[in-house]
Structures are given as C-alpha cells and as structure tokens.
Image (tube, rainbow, N blue to C red; front, side, top):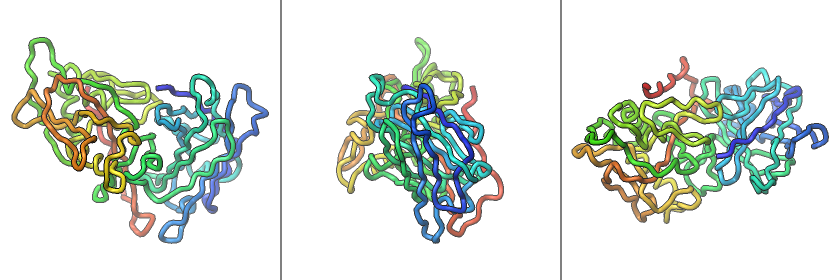
Length: 368
C-alpha cells in the first residue's frame, strides 16, 4: 500500500455553515514547488427531508475529507496548515472554529500521473459528523489526477450495497449493513488482508477451545477480541484483521496494537452472520453478487466464528455462490483469505431526535 503526502494549506477558511457549500480554492499551480495537482473543492449540501441542507445543519461539527486512488489501494496522507487539523487516521478535517471565511488550498505533492501511479483520476471522499463523532452526511467525487475543480454532492447517511462504484465508506471501503437499532454502519475493507491460517499454535500444541463462537451481526468484534486475547495462539486471522492498515498487517497474537497515524483503526474479522450480510449487500438487483466490483473472489474467506464442538475447525464463507452464500467448517490451519470489517456510528437526530447526553464509549482494544 502506497501512502502519499497531500499538502493542504489553510489560508482563511471559506466554509460557511450559514450557506450550502464549502469551497477550497486551489493555488492555480503557480506558487508551490514540488506540487503536481491542485484542486478547488466544493462540498455541495443536498437538501435533507426536513428542508435543511447538509452544511446548514446545526448538528454538524466536523467535515472530513480523504483522497484515494480509484482502485482504493492508495490512501493519500493529508498535511494540514495552520487553520486546519489532520486527524490521526489520515483525514483532513474542519471544526466549527475553522468553518468561517477564507479559502483553503488542496494539493497532492506527488504526480498521480507519474509512472509510480499512472492515474488519470483520484477520488475525494467527504463526510460530516456531529460533536460526538456520529456520521451525518457523506459524499464522494472523482477528479482529474492533474487537478482542477471538484464538486462533492453530500447525502444523508451512506449508500448500503448496490453498485460498488457508488459505494464509498469513510475509510475507502464498502458499506454493507446499516444497524438502525444501534445506529451503526458496517464497512468492509477495500481489499483482502492476505491468505492466512485461522490460528496457529506452537509446535506440538493442540488447538485450544475458544468462546469466539458468535454467529450473528455484531459478534465479529467480540469474537475477534476473544481470539486476540488467547495467548495459546501464536498468530491468527483475527489479529491480522484487527491490525490491518494501508501499510499491511500484523497477525501476531498479543502483538503491538497498530497505532500508525496513517491507519483507520477499529477493524475486525467478520462473524458468519456478518458475512451473510456482506453477501446480501453485494448482490446487484438481487441477482449474482458483484464480486469484481467489491474486490472479492470466488473463494473461501475466514469468519471469526469458531466451531462449538470441534476445536480444530472454524467456519469459512464463500461469497461467490448464488443464490446463497456458502458456509462450511474448515481446518484452522488452512490458509484462507481474510477480509476485515469495521463499524462506525451515525445519528438520526438531525431530523427530530436529540443527541446523546454523554459521549459514546470507545471500544477498548484487545489486551496485549
């Protein structure tokens, strides 16, 4: 995974909460040395059901932007100026103090059209959150790799499933499930982690039993934490999923938690129920699954669900089957494909509900 620097210089922010658009004005390519592509970015707030507009919503506290290659395999790394702040996960964001008046320059330092990239397009992904980090609005737009003007239309929430080309999650992945009861979106990573064993143990050691047996949507995260905390394992697919980033991964159980500023943390290995949800989301018009668009293969992928009776096997899924996803038990030592997923919160209160009184708790990482 290549991570390339984005130079973002703030010069008097021109983002008006009282208006409908956010404008970031490029420098015209005349002033900066070593800058290959400059952009004017306009975030266009679409009208919401209550008549408000995305950036005229008083609940909006932050607007985030990330820039990806169209194949989703490169996330460019923001660099912020004095009036803006890069977050720890590779996004450039504006807070309410920034959202006043002025202009911002957005530029990519390396040339996206150069031999190392050979890009003709890049993708701008934007999303707006409240002060608790709940996602409210999202949007994306393709832009010329050489620079120019970019208009990002914003929508309420995120697209779930459907055409992969229109499905852009905040970390460059795919949104496959909306949990309205818990107000969570589920996002699948844009590509596989690797092909790995479900779990390995020391020479001559038997595979241990584990309580990572959850089968429904919402069980992938506790399953993953259970596996990561079981020191009998020397490596696991769950650890690789948890530590996945645009750099690579670390599948060592009890290994270091990935704290790189260039990652978007919170990944885990899907349960069997979550794989079933992925399958339902990637079927286009309720027909064959769009494997190519969603960067999946007609192959076995590990779930985080261990078998309840046999400690030598765990459940695997193949999303390439139709009209139903294949689920079966496989030897834990087999090297199967691994794909990470994550959740992030959204809020409904822009249209009548009130925000929570306290900041939602942050999930603790697995114990090292």
